[in-house]
Amino acid sequence: MKKLLTFLIVSVMMLMFALPASAGSRDGMSPALREKLDTFFSNFAEARVGSFVINNEIPLDTFVNFGVQHNIINRKYDLVNVNEGYWGVKKEAVEDAVYKYFGRRINAVSTQQYKLTNNLYLVPKGSGEGLVFAQISEWHENGTDIFTGVVNVYSTSSGFTGNVHGTPAEWQNLEPQDIPNLIERYNFTATRSPSDPDRYVLVDWLEVK
Image (spheres, rainbow, N blue to C red):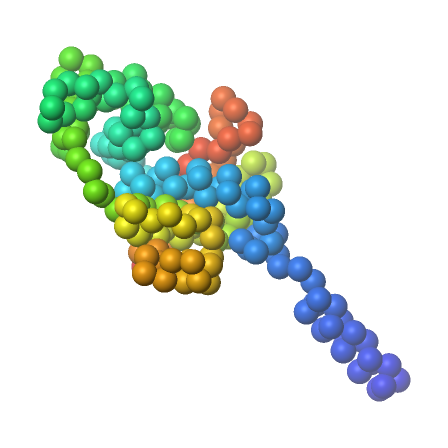
C-alpha cells in the first residue's frame, strides 16, 4: 500500500511538471493572442497613461491627454498641419479614440497639457523620442467578459529595430546594444468593447510599485 501511494504521488508530480504553461501566463498564450494584447496595451503605455481605477472619479484630463497622444503617435495621416511648429489634433478624433480604447463617450475640452482652440488641440512638432511599448505578462478570463492580468512596459531608443513581441534573450542576441528596459508594470482590468466584441476596452490600470 505504501509503495502504491508513493507511486501515485510521484505520478501526479510528474504529470504536473509535464503540463504546459498556464493559459494565464504569456508563455501559455498563442502568438496571435500575445500580439493582439501587446498591441492593445501598448496604446496606453506609449501615451504614458497613469494609474486609474474605475471606482474612483477619473479626471477628464486622463482621457483627453490619451486621445491627443494616441492620435499624434498612431494617426499622423489625420493630423492638421497648422504651421511649421505645430500639429493640430481634431476634437472628434480625440473623442473617438477615448471611446475606442476606454468605452467612454466624452465631450473633449482643454486640459492642463493641451489647449483646445477651434476644435483643434495644438501639439508641438518633435522628433527623436524613445520607443515605449507593452507586453502582456498575465491574462486571466474571469467570466462574464471581465479580464484581469499584468502588463510589462518597456522603453528603448527610437531606432530600435527588434521585435517588440520578442523576449529579452532574443533582444540580447540580436541587438545587444539596444535592449529594451523594463520601466513599469501595471495590473489591469479590461472588458469587451461595447461596439465590437472582438476588441477590448480598459477599465482599471494600476501601477505595481
